[in-house]
Structures are given as structure tokens and as C-alpha cells.
Length: 393
Image 1 (cartoon, rainbow, N blue to C red):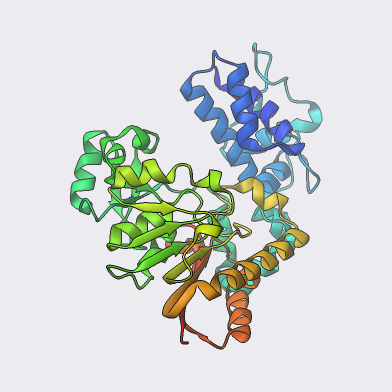
Image 2 (cartoon, rainbow, N blue to C red):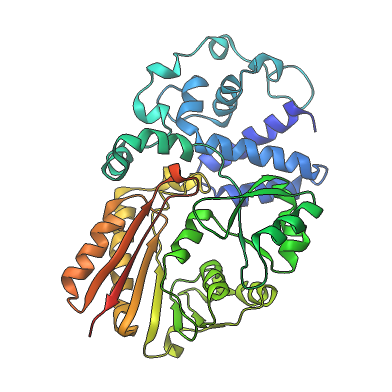
């Protein structure tokens, strides 16, 4: 496909996404209906779509939409202007190219520097105070990072390997990476990210895909050999795998949707770790450590899931906060005296983080706060929060 044809495909996909459809599903359906498109074509179209979703307000502004809801066409016009590419070179009469620009579209838009703050930072206006409350003067810089593509991070399985050997093995498959300061197990991929899933390092369980901030959460847990550990909101088991690599644990993973845990067994097998999966009725009465990586707004990871940024509402945020409190109430009795309750989100919003923990402690005098940490995107990974609480009696 030509660059112009890829642009046309991205516009088509974006219009579907902007009408409310899931971006991943739209891209999958487009690929199934266009078998002639090669892997590089699909990757380029995907990049167009997700870049536009991350930067929807600024691209729309530069594409002529102003502060109104943009079309896929306006987003791609804005994207080209950000890249310093004259839209007339791709919006042209060529076969499969988007139709040529109109006189109105060709007119220079107002400079982005004159746009409202939320437009410049690609953030819904109502979320700005929530970011400011946590990040203060760093808020704008963090939001700018959340408008860019996320780095790809790997976690070295220190139960099987060392960082130096993992780097050597990755290099044999043309993948370059460097250690990252957020975690002693973290590598940032600098070249060959799309080859990771086919690499020997990945296939043999030497490395796993995991954000550096997520790895930092595991670094902060008081893990010791022999502990009984419950990963209560396990999902695909990434944090279970990271915990199991650090100590000889008796690990149990649970998720309200068992289908989310279907990849845990093969991932654990690759990693050389044993992880039991269990429904709520089959959980033990108590554990030495319970980790709750709860459902949240995802406001620290909008660069990875940008559609969520625009779909979030105050009502949705309130429901999430209520669910988080409910989960904490559910798991509190499963922490044995002397044990630890770990609470984590990929959010930067205080109502989901410090306020949630403070409210829990006010209700449960049998727990005390050990530590809490807010991880900012400015530290190099996604934004995360975690707190560890000890049960006293």
C-alpha cells in the first residue's frame, strides 16, 4: 500500500472508532476485510490510528475542527501538519488516496500555542484538575508524555537469568535494550520491539513484556520464600509471574472473570513458575500477602489505551472508586495477622489512590500503612500508585 492508501484506511478506521466502536476490534475487522494489506501496512495504519487517538484534541485543532469533535479526515490532516508534511502531498488525486483538500481545509489553522490547555495537552478539560492535584507543576510534562507512544519494556526473569544474559540473547535476535532505573529487572527496548514475541529470550521465559512501573510495584513488596500469596485481580498474571520470579512462593491467582486468566498457565510454564488459579469459592481463608491491582481509570497509562481517556466520565470514575473500596473490603479478611495487603492502580488520581487507602484505614484500625508510592510517567514508565498495609491483629 502507498502512504496515501494507508492514510485512507486510517481515516476509515478512525471514523468507526469515533462513532463509538472499539479501536482494536475495528483494526482487526479492517485487516480481515483487506487481506492484501501486508504486516507493514497493518502496523502503519495501527500507528496512525493510535497516534490520532492519543492526540485527538491537538490533531483535531490543527486539522480544522477547532474544539469540536473531529473526523478521521481532520485528525489525519492534523497529524501530517504535526509531522511537518504538507497534506496536499497525500490528499490528492492518486488512486486510493484521500480526496484532495478543500479550500477551507487548506487554510492554515490557528497555532496550537493559542489553543486552550486541554487541547494542547490532549486531555479532557475535567481531568486536568485531577492530574494537577497529584502532579502539581509536573502535570503538563506528564500529560505530554501520555500523548506519545509508550516505550516497550521487558522484565528479566531473575529466577532463570541475569540482565546481562538476557541482553545477549535478545541481541542474537536483533533486539536491542538497555536497563531502566525504575526497576532492577527492567529493560527498555530501543530497537526491534516487534520481534520480541518471536525471540528466544521470550519463548524460553527469560523475559516477559511488562511496564517498568508495574515492575517497580513488585520491587516494593515484602516477598519471602514460603509465603502464601494471593493475586486477587490477576488478569493475565503479569504481576504473579513477577512475584514468582523473586521468591519461592505459594502463588494463587484469582480474577472475577476466569477467562482473563487463560494465559497464566502457558506463561508460568515458560517462566518455570507454578501459579494456581482459583475461583472465589476455592480461595484459602487467609494469606501472608494479598495483592489487589484493582480496576481503575487507567489515567497513568492512557498512552497505551488512549480510547479510555476520552470515554472516561465522572460517573464512571465514581463507579470505579466504589468498586475499589468494595474489593478492599472483600480481601481484608483474607490477610492473616502480620500479613500484608498491597493495593495498586495504574492511575494518577488521588480519589483512586491515597484517598482510597486513607478511607480504608479509617474503616480498619487493624491495618497500618507501611509505605505508599506514586510513580509518575516522568520516571520513564506508565503512571502507577501502590501502597502496602500490614494487618496488626
